Image 1 (tube, rainbow, N blue to C red):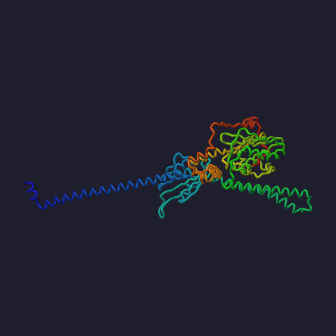
Image 2: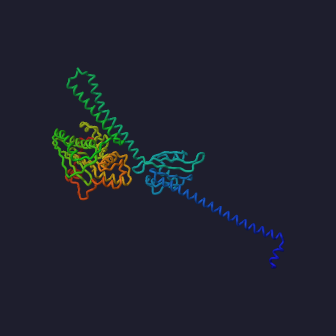
Length: 491
């Protein structure tokens, strides 16, 4: 009762003072509460921005790793900001230099890249060679318009293949010019001779010989142009082929018959042996003729009179293997891979007497590759040569195509596979399956279609070519027989 009376009897100023204190305390508490809430909101905003920045950085780094070029980014202070793994592989680095000056000292001294950077050039290009590879370096300063540089980006691109293709292109043009110039010179010479001497002043036999030589070189130019057009279509994947199921035994037997006349003229024994039963292949008959006629005719050209040319056919696993062996002049081992290059001749003078354009084996290799096969050569000088062509069976390519289809592989750009798809769709129609693409087939329909092409696990197919080439290369080297063939195989 007394305390209540005491409160009521307090001085008004004291009550006012206590009111101010209590109000201030409440204000401070409320201000602290709202400040804490604001700071928390700002912290959440900072965390969100930081997370977005980290996600963006991870996305950028992920994109950089997917690039087929090397990328290095240095900051304004020259310190390393980021680099993808590919650049380390390209430049054979354990770690990318952590400062741009170290990088330029290592890769920019001899090619002028460092000097360009010191001169303040915003963009520079240079080339470097690391091992067997050649790389192009692009260094560019990055900055917002009207502001100073905030980063320097270095892009590393592998140009080895491009340089090789450029060189091959230049060599090809030079070789074409040379090959066309030779017959044109001969045609011009003989034509001028006829015009200068006059037809009346030359004997009929001499005139006939001149005209015959003009005709031969005209035919040679025509053959060369045809081969060049064929190579061009092969390079651009534009060659039109009629692919079908082909029995290689029948195909080769027909080709051997066609070459029998040429063999008889030189008294060469030409034979064909079937070592194992073979399955069909998926191929263009015209292309097969081009491949094997070139090899057979080369074997007959470079085999001496009364020599021997043999054709062997067999199966190795799921491939059909055709080997053509002769006991002719042979090819030195150091030239055996080069003979598949365009216009390559071991002896430019000796090879022309046999005719040819210098493109035969190159075209053969391209056509074999187009059929998803491979071609190889093994030869011993003065003993003979053995060319081996391996082609996948129809069943093998069908199984592979269906497996690739299930795995989502794209084969639209491959003319061989495009033809194979059309072939299988025709087979599907025969089973009552009407589809416009193999991708539309159900699993049950695929199984029905592939039933004839299932692998037979009970068939044991092994190579049986023992003794096809009787003299081993090592034996030849040990015996000291190092003489080169007089005339190389015409390519």
